Amino acid sequence: MTTRMMMTTERTTTTDFILILLSAGSSTRMGTGQKKEYLPLEGGTVLSKSLLSFLNFANQQSAEEKSLTHIFITVPHNQEREAEKAAFADPRLEDLKKNRHFHFIEGGKSRQESVHLALKAALPYSSEKSIVLIHDAARPFVSEKIIRETAESALRYGAAVPAIPAVDTLKEISESENGLFIKKHLRRSSLRAVQTPQAFNLRTLLSCHEKAESNQIEFTDDSEIWDAYPDLTEGKKVFLSEGSPENKKITYKNDMPEQEKNSESTEEKMCPTKIRVGMGTDLHVLCEGRDFILGGVRIPAEKGELGHSDGDVLFHAISDSLLGASGLGDIGSYFPPEEAKWKDADSAVLLKKIWSDVKSKGWTLVNLDCVLEFEKPKFLPWRDKVISSIAETLGTEKDRIFVKAKTNEKMDSVGHGDAIKAYCVCLLEKIK
Image 1 (tube, one colour):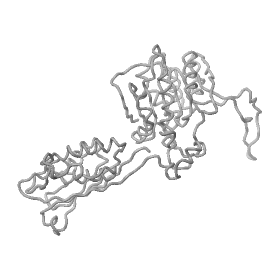
Image 2 (cartoon, one colour):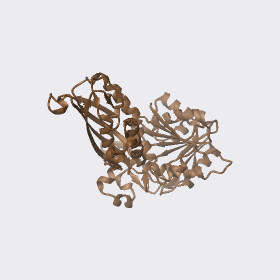
Image 3 (cartoon, helix red, strand yellow):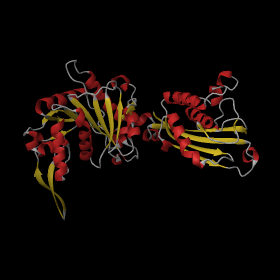
Image 4 (tube, helix red, strand yellow):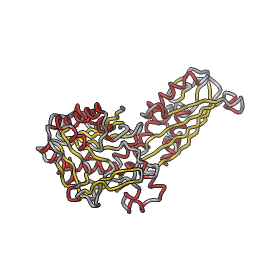
């Protein structure tokens, strides 16, 4: 299990309510190839819309009530970064998320396994009376009223789920070699369709999950797990609070609101992130008496780059690629060479300024791919150090950066050892 935790405060607390948002599914039934929780909805995403409802609920709690400060979001393997962007896509969350702890946790192969993993992660932040609210992130239309009534009922009874009367007449079936037949006629008046959030005493539910795992039994939802082990729940039954037909789950493409389906092209609906490619290139003369600097790393060499700044040809190409992708200009307009204050400037400082401005526009880095052209010295022994330096300067992971070097087969100024050239292609993305 991997966990990515984002905190807006250093304070750690135990609370009456802990939220688990389930978003680790594959969304295959959407038929779009796009994870449904990341689809655009009402100025954010499906995931941010669900989160907004719970944070609004927490914001309305009285001063006497303990707040909802710990939120656990289960996500697919290696999608912590994407989930974080989708979760906070709605600008209305900016103030609401303050003083709260967000944990992005890799989910399991099933809903039950994902809940179990999240419960174990939440245990250190719980008390004996803590109530966990477990909600499908694909139910973005849940109301604060449903959340409050379910949460308060769970505090009173130990377990509660919202439910609505069954609309269709349901039958229990039997299956034979000739097909399906009705086995039993169920009374619709005694049937309910349950929704989320489902709310339980956290530590009791975790004990039930532990026993279910030990018994290797797969259940449909957490209310079924709770009812399966009366010895652990002291025989407490699950209370049914009032749900709503509006609290529907997005399962198929047609479950999305009409205005959302009509507001964008099909391509935009299927891709809630905006992506941009940028290319940068730079050439510097090599001469004696100058440092040979690549990506912030000084490499022993007979000659170094001649330039108005420190001449770091690689950082300059990276800077231009980032500025081009984000549409913010180029390095020459940012730091005019005719201005004396940029004389011998540290290119790492310049790149950090550029990257700060690019990030402020909502862009994040997917990857950089760089090519260097020069004759000597050999680059391979220095490659890992250069990649690490770039990653540190941009505050990103090394596996998003790659740099390779070529010679120019003794042709032109580069091939004759009189110049060095760098190319960089970057991919940026942001939630629309």
